[in-house]
Image 1 (cartoon, one colour):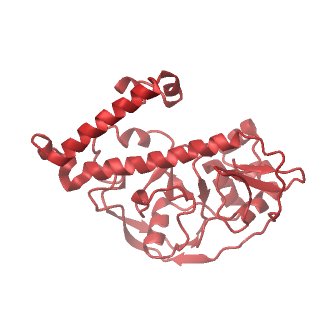
Image 2: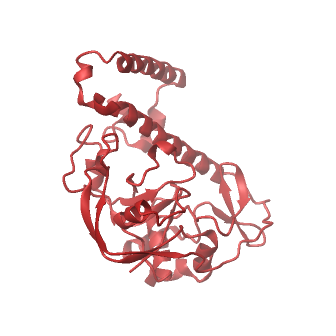
Image 3: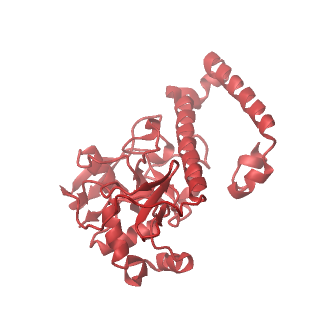
Amino acid sequence: MDALYIPENCPKPERGGKLPKREELIKTAVEYQDNNALMLLEMVSPYSDQKLFEDEYIQYFIIQHYAQHYETMQMVLQQRALQKDYSGYVVKNILTAKQNMVGIQLINGDTYLAGAESAVTYDNERPRHEIKLNTFSIAERPASNAEYLAFIEDGGYQQQALWSEEGWLWQQEHNENAPEHWQQDKNKHWFGINNDGAFDLPPGHAVYGINHFEATAFAKWSNARLPHEHEWEIALTDHHLPNTGYVWEWCNNLFYPYPGFKAFPYDEYSSPWFEQPHYVLRGASHHTRPEIKRPTFRNFFGPDKRHIFAGCRLAYD
């Protein structure tokens, strides 16, 4: 089905209208599933000699892709929820702005090891390699709803000096003034929307629904910056980030190949994404399956994307 599912042949926004009928798709999927299950069970030659079967790589690869598809489906459900009318909702627990609610952890400059050793991780997580970090500090948890509201109320969306050139162009085009899933009731109090509908925003919960442009502007407003992904990874593996797994956390670096990178299981799996402006996100959201919750997992999206349950964690030089 290359004509439908290979991005170069059929961009994702065009696929919906080209899909076969639902019954036909289900029948085909069941047949593929049965055939693949037999192949994995029997492991007969020539498949048994295929590198994909080493260390049960293909099984882990499929499971991890299913985990990513699960989160994508949650994104779709969130987008559907945002299309509904919540004009009658009234906030009971009013969100108020508050700054500097978080503790800071100091990480000493040194040489560290980053990246993955496991053969069942994705190719872009490997190989494990040495990195040199300068001393830095990092917040113990992601930025909260109350902290982000302080940014909003201080006019953060209207202060050009806080934004990158590209980010300001995005802001001028879209004229946003809050995270994607935030709305205001008749009293101008903010509330959130998720798959279950409208809800009051807990002040201490991690803010999400912001893109890289917004996260960078918020960090600058906070007299901070976004961490490099290696800073994030080392802080986590050294047990300095006890509060993760609530939101994907934007990092300040582009997605790139590690030194010694080798494409696997095919050349176009990770490599094409290095050539486009995608920024790395680390951590996990509350919708992320445990199969991909690991310190070395590298998520990545374009800087304008807001639908991905992403927030941010501040870092300081």
